[in-house]
Length: 74
Image (cartoon, rainbow, N blue to C red):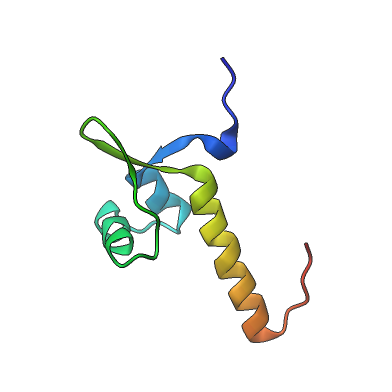
């Protein structure tokens, strides 16, 4: 069975790596602050959609580019 990479679920540890190596505790804090979406619960595990994390990264890039006047390359 082939799974679309965008819609795969990733662990909080993997989210931390995707966001530059922050801890899963910091990821949980960002969720509580509303900076990351609520996770999907799989039994005792919490997961986020990879596409949600990538969307957050894209938004951070866009805000940086707007702040520093970097032309949109997309």
